[in-house]
Image 1 (cartoon, rainbow, N blue to C red):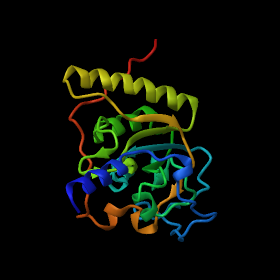
Image 2 (tube, rainbow, N blue to C red):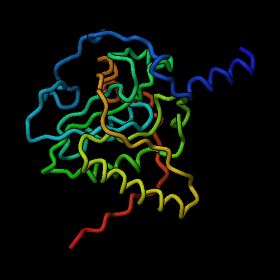
Image 3 (tube, rainbow, N blue to C red):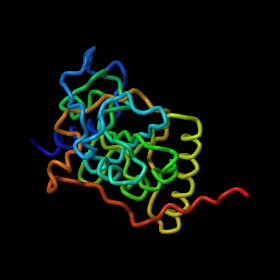
Length: 224
C-alpha cells in the first residue's frame, strides 16, 4: 500500500457514511449470547431487568475498556457492549470495522438510580477518555471510536449537556482542546458478539486504549 492509498483508507474510516451507503444488515442477530454476565454471574446480561433500574449508554473508544470503567461501580447492576448510532440492523463486528454501518462501539450501563446518580456516570465518562479527538480514541481510528453520550430521557440529555459545558470550561483553562463528543437521544442498541462482552474480565492482559486527560469534571452546584 502506498502513501496515497493509506491516506485514502484512513479518510474513509473517519467519514460518517450516509444511510444509502450502509450495509443492509439482517433481521435477527448473527450470533447467540450467553444469558449471564461474566462479572456479575448471578445477573442476566439480557433484558428484561428489574423495573427499578435505569439505562445509560456511552461511546468512549474501544468498548472493552469502556465497559470495565463501569462494572466495578457501586450501584451498577450490569453492563454490556454493543453497537449503536448507525444504520445497519444487527451488525457484526467485521461490518462495524468496515466503516459501512455508521455504528459506534458503546457500553450500555444498567444502574440503580437509588444507589448512584447519572451525574456520577457522566463523571466517569468524561474523565476516563479523551473526548476531543473526533473519530478516534488514541491509536484506534474510525467512526466506531467516536465519543458520545446517548440519552434515554430528557433529564439525562440535559445533565449530559450541562456536564459537557462544565468539562469544556475545565479543558479550556488548560488549553486542552474542544470537545467533539456527540450528545443525542439513545438509538437502538445491538449487542456485540459474546467474546466482546466483559472482554477484559476474561482477558486481564487484553488491550485497552482508553486514556483520560487528568482533568476532573467540576462538581455540579446543588440548588438550594
